[in-house]
Amino acid sequence: MRLSSKWLLCVLASVAPIFAQAGGPLNITSTSPLPNATQNSPYEFDFVANVSGALVWSLTSGTILPKGLDLDRSSGRLSGTPTEQGNFSIGVNVEDGQKRQASAGFLLQVKPPLVITTPSPISATAGSSLTIVLSATGGTPAPSGYFWQVAPGSQLPSWLKIDPQSPDFLTGTPPAAGTFSFTVQVTDSGLSSPATKQLTIVVQPAISITTASQYYFLITLDYERI
Image (cartoon, rainbow, N blue to C red; front, side):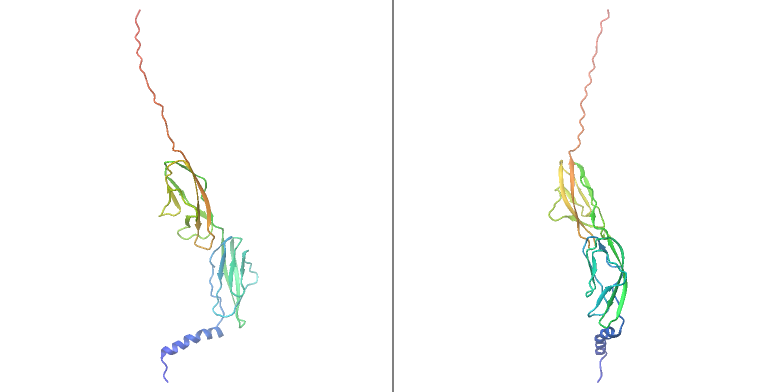
C-alpha cells in the first residue's frame, strides 16, 4: 500500500509531542525578566514548562520572594500583593511525573506604588488662562507616559477641559472667583492599582488698577504796584 507524504506528515506531527514528552529534556520555557510588579498592587505570573501533565513547582534553595508573593506548587503561578519594592532574583524548579527536573533563574522588579504628585491647592485668577500639568511617579508608565482621566463620579468645572493632544494637561479660563474641587485618576501600563487625588483650584478676583484723576489749576495773581 502506498502512503501519501501528507498522511505521513500528519502522523509524525501527532506523535512528535509524545516522543518529546517521553524522552526529551524537561525545560522551563518562561523567560526573564518577569513582568514588573508594583508595591501594594495585586500581581500574578504563570511559569510554563515544555511538557503538559502534572508538574510540581518549587523555589530553588536560598530564593526569598518579595513579601506578599507566593508560588503555587501545582500550577506554577506566582501571585499575591508585594509589600516591598526592589529587585529580586528568583530561582524556580519544576519536576514532572517521570521525576525529571529543571530549574531556571528570573529577575523580578517591584516598583514603587503609583502616586499623583500634582500639587494642590492650585492658585488662579479670574479672567486669566490657567494650565494644570498632571504628574505622577511610580508604577510602570508606557512610553507615552501615564493614562489620565477624571475619576468616576467626579467632574471638571465647566470652564476647564482636558487637552485632547496632551491628556496630562488641563486648560481653561475661570470666569469668576471661587473654589473648585475635582478628582483625577491615573493608571500605568502595568498591573498597578489606579491612583486618585482630589485637586482644588482657588480662583482669586481679577486684579483691577484704579488711578485717581489729578487736576491742575493755574492761578494768576495780579499785584498792584504801590
